Image 1 (cartoon, rainbow, N blue to C red):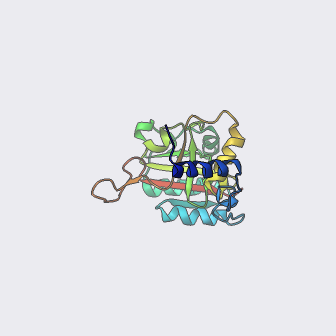
Image 2: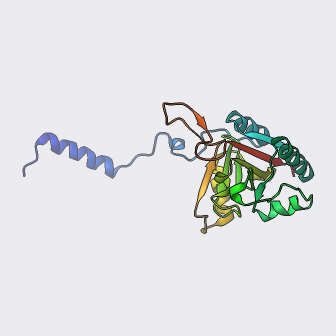
Image 3: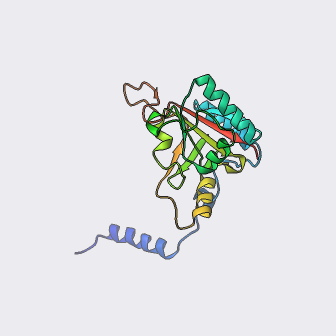
Length: 211
């Protein structure tokens, strides 16, 4: 098949361009640097601002003892009778106080679920959860209220930082599922009306303990 002169000229220019590659004019736009300015200080405040903006409930605790007392007051005010927890590290702390409402029934009867988390993302107010946690996949979304106990060392600025820490923590053996919770579950699929708690807990609390 004979190639027309115009087409041959186009192919010639393409071949020449491929044989002489040029550098990208904007190399930093290819994901080599973060779009957002990282903040090294004030991650607690940043997370609290973003998390509460999304209807999350944030409780800052200066110690484990204060966390337990805040949890006791919350349970009494809400008249909760069964706070379900299956995270050994959290249960070890709570059992020292002999809280009367802890694990007083099955998960199906839980007024609220208490779990840990992997990380807290300050920039978006997001909680990072994984299947490797003792609470598993079901507990964080099954109960009507989800309470997370986290520590200040789990704060990161952006999602990229959380992914890097997960890789450092688990190496090649990453959890089978990693999920991101940004406030209570919500949807506006039906007539564009926002409904909170449609696919998971209606209320989400973060008890952040300062170490």
